[in-house]
Length: 245
Image (cartoon, rainbow, N blue to C red):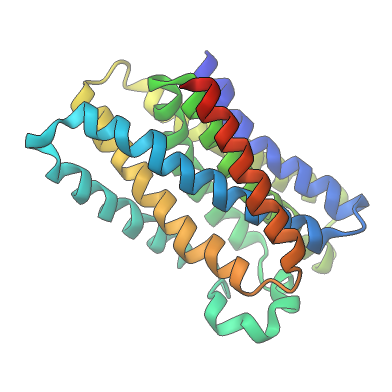
């Protein structure tokens, strides 16, 4: 039950994005802060928690499977990313302020699939280690705040009523749970399968870091907020690593 609740946590950050889209004043500053903190949290979590855990589960003789599934994870997120219209950041750096207007209902559907797969990774991490799963949920969740703001703002642009916006955000909030339920239906799994699924998670995190978070940080006009986010994320992870040993 605990891994399921941890998986839900990542989706709850969409609600924060919804509230900020309606009531927040400094949305851009918060987006840059959350992106910066997500970058630090996910990068350090990858280096000090997830990768060492996978290496231990697989052993030296089966380490090749880690690299295979890492590549698969990156390719999988790239394919899903292609479903999101106008989400090529490199082509839009000069029009970043108009980025919100390009993501609508189709993006919501793509993000539901995207987060269901991330939910699988979070659930697997929480199954191995509660602290690891919680940190991954926070890292993914921080990345979801901007999407919550974007989706809400976009649906407002397309004259969607409040009920439809809330339904979309609720589906996004619950999307990570869908991935956890998929894994739960299969029951217990071996260390090898678990390590392969975790390697898939590593690939997804690498993709998010390199092609989402890093690009967003590079195009940020509020470097002060993103830098603070990076530092807070690093301090947050350092404290967790010290506490968790």
